[in-house]
Length: 441
Image 1: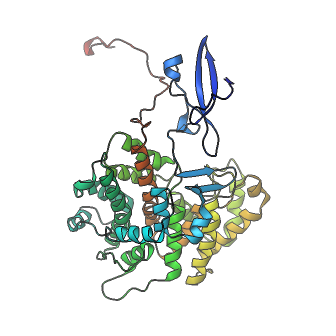
Image 2: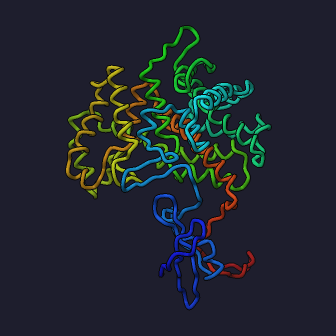
Image 3: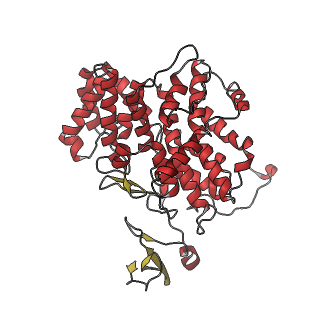
């Protein structure tokens, strides 16, 4: 394949790649983004050559144009609308970040007050929805409950399911961001046999979620500001992550014209997978398996032995080949929470801290860039805050809702987008004639 010179100013096209296949030539535009690698536009490849591309997992394929999130895994960079994740986590609130992801710019003071009020006024769910929860077994996984209840929102809010109406898209977006914590807290309360706690309009986003999860009707609940700020920061760190599996699921579902509630329910179902949103739960389970600090050398040796089949969960990342920028913030947040709760000496957390120390100093881990990732620290933090492991992915879903809904809106408003229809490399039987039942041997 050859790359030609510049194309004379075609928007987004920097050059042309020429593919020769059995005498057939195909000129494919090479499109450049603001930052990041160029992409070869293969949209006309089948028309010109009769061939498709083959890319399992779509790891070398850009499926859309986006202006929301940028990742450079080699450099350890994550930007929301151009802003570094560490700056946002340090200085912004989650709702500021939501506004940024949805609208492309940080809100003014006036815009923020209006946006915050709008989200706050949408936090309650229809009272009939409380009956949905009694249809689930008490021991149902909260993510199973989330998939069902979020999908059912479209049966209650008919005035925001017309995807061709910009105003309805806006209302649906606000409802999803506002109601997700309420539904998540209800799923948690149902699982432990406690009454639902209604949202309070006088609390900020994270504090409101904490009181819906941990308050009880018989006594007042005091918000710990360290816990509230830590949770708000966790939400910011998980708000979006480019075209990951669940985001791609939301976009693919949305490309068919499905309503936004159904699309987000599909995203939740995808997030539930252990290879995606369940990673922090897996990391904590690994710590429980190790159990005590004195057993760490045994597991470190297993991790270094490629024939052992054992992997240290919470280390390394598929995208980041450098230190995950979110992990640096999460690490500091983790230690803040442990200090505030006086839990630095608990056995399980002692195991985590020793593993962290080893990973940051052991040449084997440094050489292979197996740094502790965000899942390693978030699992420890959430456990210390009192959340059971079954709720870890639920909290991930609360945070990621704004990313899903922002990506969905961008897709709906993109004139280039069509219904998703991947192709395949078929390796099944060629055409053959049907043999009637009595003729088969």
